[in-house]
Image (cartoon, rainbow over all chains, first blue to last red; front, side):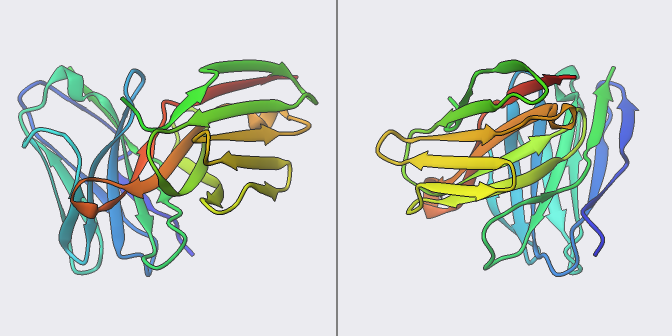
Length: 113
Length: 114
């Protein structure tokens, strides 16, 4: 069974640009969550999607958005990038009705110059 | 502040020794989970303990949960160099709008020296 796949793994952008990150969950998992991880702040919850609907949202500005497609694949977008957006962005999928265990991808490392 | 807070922030031990990490939280929970993260990689689920459980084992891992003190500990016995990683606790509870959510601590960085 393939794990959670995130693309791209690494990317470099400049301030003001936008970026789109992709996440393919484990087959059969319909819930996808996104996290931002930085050394000082740890894991910060961005949002959670289930069946193409955002179920939960963290405390991030509107520049951070996401969506989920009918095949459960998810994307997140960050517009007007700032230096502080440099982070590891992690996607996790889970099986609803399961124990709540999250299965993480390897992350997308974003560097904003 | 974070619901889950691990201590110590960093721990360095010799191979073969035991490593103990603690996690404290603030509100009621459904369960508490521990994850491991190797440098720059994704997190891997280690163990989940439900709010009505007090202790759980998985291989060399032992997790305890004290809901009266709102704390949990993760013990890794007979540590190996491959255990070098960051360890995070995540509390599964209820957030605003009655939405279930996981809240993460900042992690404990464990270094196991050969």
